[in-house]
Length: 389
Image (cartoon, rainbow, N blue to C red; front, side):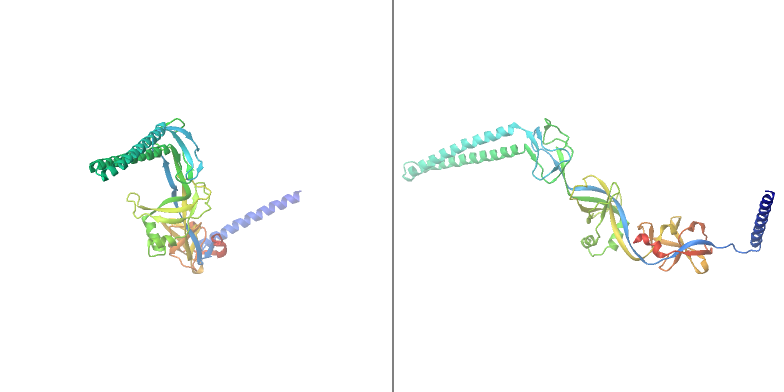
């Protein structure tokens, strides 16, 4: 036991002496001006890459048609055939109004027609009776003209009665209200028995045709110019046709399955917002998208043989972006770069400051200084760019 304790004490003394000696060696090296050993940093060589850049724009959604259903006559709601949110077809019955006065007008007009037809028949008989007497000079020609004028007047009264009947039937038809389009029923603010007039402020309901949905979004003036310069085509119509299909990101962050097309661009730039309005159209076969919702329109842009670097390889200073380029013998150079506004995932697209074949520091740039010498640990470019595949 004593022997073991002696050995442990001797070992501890040796370790302490060695440590003191190693520290003295480091201090001596520093005093002699020897450079500290180079630190290791991961680096990689830039290779040309192709990628798809996505630009996201907030959008509001509107159905292809949003039609307010309003009464054309006054009456009480007698029956409601649909419910809020119902899917309806064109011509489907929505409401029926109780307006007995219009049914009475139809009856009165029908009776007036019968009376007018009888008067016309009587006038025709008088003309037919008078004509042969005039031809035989038994009575004057004046009598025939008078009978003919009476017939014309009776026919005019008959035509007026028929017009009144048609108008009465039209008004009676307005007591039943049908859907003008295929769509989805909105809110129904009125209940059975409510008095409705043609001047009522709120509509009976709204029917939204959502077979196709319009997504409205805006681009600022700079983005509009970039669009005009980068998309092929001599005219605006050609540029719209050459615009790639766009995606829709729904409010829950999920991607809508159907692709859309940008179809229109406003001819004016809003002076208050400095932006132009765009409209993309998306098919909506199962009615997943509803009018009045919000989403994000995603426009893709492809780049080929571009200089792409991971965002973590750069750092930002006073609104500018920098990277460290590794030169000969491991010396690094602080280099300013220009990047596109759009990013692809965790990568920047560099438009100036770097070229394919340059080697840059991948990580840890914040701890470097210009001219520092590092020990480069090369990383595989395939590993660096694997997320782009």
